[in-house]
Amino acid sequence: MQGEGGLAGVPSVFIRTSGCNLRCSWCDSAYTSWEPEGETEDIEDVVERAEEHGADHYVVTGGEPLLQPDVDELCAALNGHVTVETNATVYRDVDAELVSMSPKLSNSTPESGDWREIHEDKRLNFDVIESYIGSHEYQLKFVVADRGDLEEIEDILASLSEYDRDRVLLMPEGVDRDTLRERGEWLAEVCKERGFRYSPRLQIQIYGNKRGT
Image (cartoon, rainbow, N blue to C red; front, side):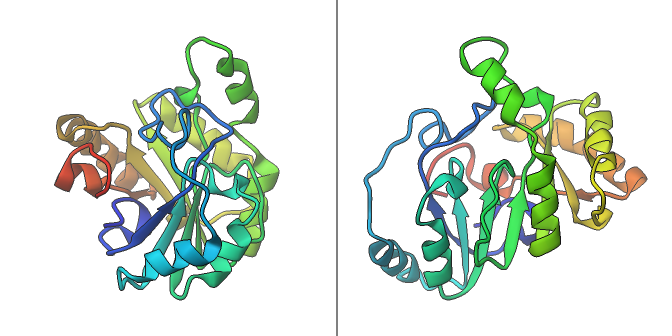
């Protein structure tokens, strides 16, 4: 089940790639980002397995899927609606019906460690964001931890030459139902006041924080 963004609630097949060029402090998929798992598979085998589920929507995600050398071939081979979920630091002219960008706010930067400086330097790439806005159907999804994040979001949007405000989604950060409910209550009001869209995390609300849902 797609749990986030404008297609929340749509049954979807998720194809999750391994490896990421960022290290978000609240990452909920370390098994494909920080400590990548899995085996190398041929595109044909991945597509065959994905199509066995009989869904019309496919989500190519990660990690950061656009780091994968064959992601263009994969997206083109999928017969249906393809969403690519990306941190918007890498541009690829992928064959996708939707590019779901999630630019990382400062709340994502690790407090310490070797990755802090690397992450902070790479987490925003305005050229890449604007390239997707100009070339693909897109949405901009921001993970919000507290009210202090709101002005940072407005600053990022103000730095873009063009964007549609109704394609900007705010999503509460959290991996348990209570946190999402608490943050979601005030964040939904912010969306109404500022003209943003609200994104739930249905996968947490329905299944809890576990893999394979």
